[in-house]
Length: 200
Image 1 (cartoon, rainbow, N blue to C red):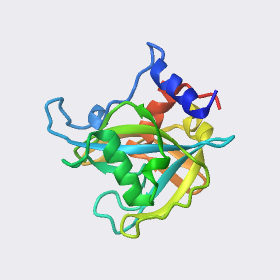
Image 2: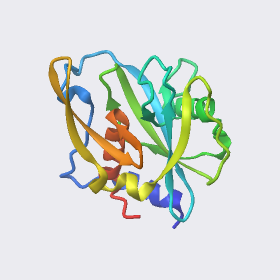
Image 3: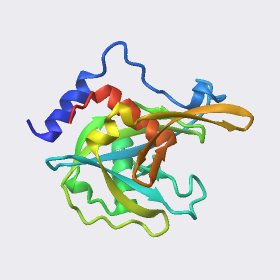
Image 4: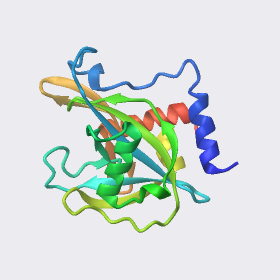
């Protein structure tokens, strides 16, 4: 079975009924269901190789929001975008020069609501290995790949907490070498792990 078919099957099958998915930062913060959030989308590009990997970016230190943090390529859904998939493809092309015609879309995963005011739809996709990706100088400092099995392994999902604006905030982090994946990106990875039940 191809990687795309395996992912599609796993995504459609869904998690076991007892699985708890993370829906957003509202567990610790004042995010009510009625809050108006901006629609956003990120691409989760998985490389089609014998040991699949996930492409991630590290934002530049000059970004106004989340400087230096690790994220999937993506951003706000613009009015001219035809939904989350189109937005995720556009953003990936703008941020890392990922040619959209080389992307095989698997489908949307579970949405995540962030404290910064976004309702994010992750779009799972498969891309050819070893593409020449060029980071946007203004937005992306680095593009790198982490093995899919590592990033989805629950043993690598570390629960942590920090005091933020007078309240204790709980979050996940994933350490890959010297890189720290945390916050909404880590939460979406945890959801993918619970939904896909990936075993390498």
